[in-house]
Length: 163
Length: 99
Image 1 (cartoon, one colour):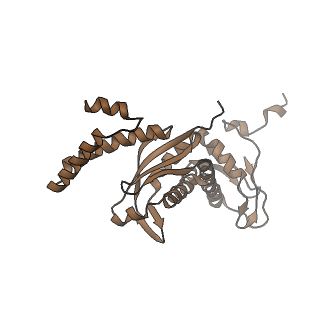
Image 2 (spheres, rainbow over the protein chains, first blue to last red):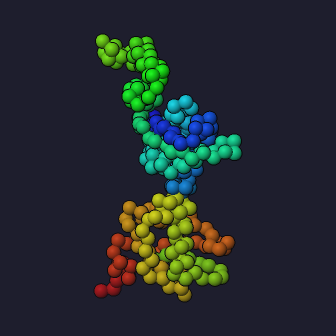
Image 3 (cartoon, helix red, strand yellow):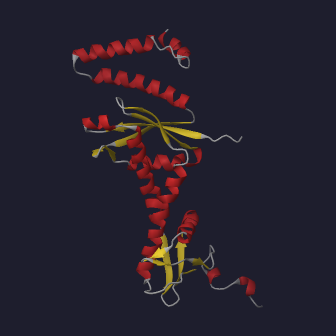
C-alpha cells in the first residue's frame, strides 16, 4: 500500500545518421529527455518527472532505451518524448527521434515485450533483406533464438512456440 | 480579478497578457503557454484585470501567477481578489448584500 509505483517506458532511438549509434549513451539520452520535458512542461513538469527518473537499460546496437519514472508523471514523460530532436555527446549533435514501443509497470514485462518485438523484427528483416548472405545470417539467428531461449521467465512460452 | 503592485512603468494590456503567458511558460512549459487565457478587462490605473481561463487550466494559471516574481527586473506580485465561474459574480460580493 505504501510502495512507490514506477512506470517503465521502452523506446527506440531512430536516426538517419549512422554515427548517431556511437553516441547513444545513458547520460546523453537522459539529458536530452530532461531537456525536452523542461521545454514542454516547464519547471513543474521537470521537477515532477525527475523524482525517480533514470535510464535503466540502453542498447546502442539496436537503439533500445528503457526509462523509469513515477506512475503519477509518466504521462508527462510520454507526451514530451516526441519533442526530443537531438542527442548531444562529446560536443556533437545528431538529429534523432524517439519512438515509444511499450509502457510497463515492471522491468520484467518490458523485457518480455522486447523479446517478442525483436523476434518479430527479425522476421521483418528476413523479408526485406536483399543479399543472400544476409538472408542466411538472419535465418541462422532466427533458428538459434527460437531453440536456445533458456531464460526462466520465457522458457515455457518458447516451448509452446517451437513445439 | 488580479492586482499587482509595482514601482515604475505600468504595463499596458498587451504587455500584461505577455506577462501572464510568460509566467505560464516558465512554470508549465509550452503546454502552459498554449493555454487559452483571455484578458477581459484591464485597468492601467489600478493595474487590475479580469482573466478568463478554461476550468481545466485554472490551477495552472493560479499557480503560475503566484510564482511570478519579476516584471522588467522589478519585484512584483499578483494578488487574486476574487474568483468565480460566473462573470456577474465578480461585480459584487454577495455576502455584503444589503436587502
